[in-house]
Image 1 (tube, helix red, strand yellow):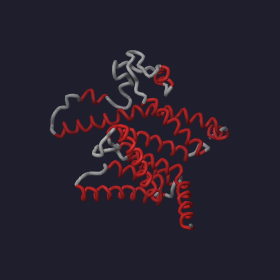
Image 2 (tube, one colour):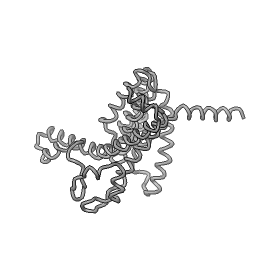
Image 3 (spheres, helix red, strand yellow):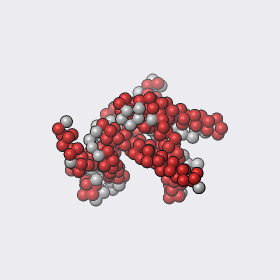
Image 4 (cartoon, one colour):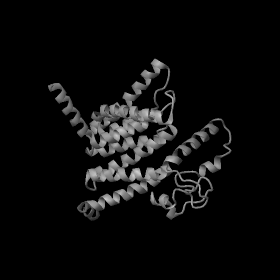
Length: 296
């Protein structure tokens, strides 16, 4: 408690600690983003072999692959990353974006994720202003949304391993009404899931195609559990707006066709994070604009 009190008495210390923590978590998220889908694919393959009553030829190597093992290494030469080469952002700059052993390029995405995680964490520290349960929950939500966004971009997948714990965690934080009352959070989780579930089945009945995945339902349910049912209309509208802008920009820059599927999870994550931080302000601004228009 004395440590928390000391941090709260010196806001710059809280901001520096949260920034450093965010950078370190960003480094871990890079590992999670890459390895979790591989682990899920391996588990699915193993289950298929078991169902077919066949031996999995890659069983032993796959069993050893997880979040902690093997140690991070260069995908080209398998050079194991040393401690000084794994400092978030700084190591990439010192190495000039190249492996110290084989000189192959290291994707800029790694420091980008670390930097984004650090800066968003810092923004939360500035927003909340003190070390509290509210800040802790905000950090956990943000880190989870970053991981889900990147995995969905890579694989069009929102893993249950993240979305479901995120949902329960939102309800847990709201037992004491940290972000919303518990009844609002429970209704938000139910309404979040059922709203996109209904859209999914309506679209499928009308077109015979699947417009989105079940992971999107669970992510919106999780956001409803964190923010309450009142935030859901804003999240859906914002995600549609973000999707239209970013989706159109990606189609233009990458010259992608309209028939190529695009993940909806990142737009939900961005919209949910915006609503989490600035939802009341956005609604107040909207009603102010609506009031001015109705009075003219």
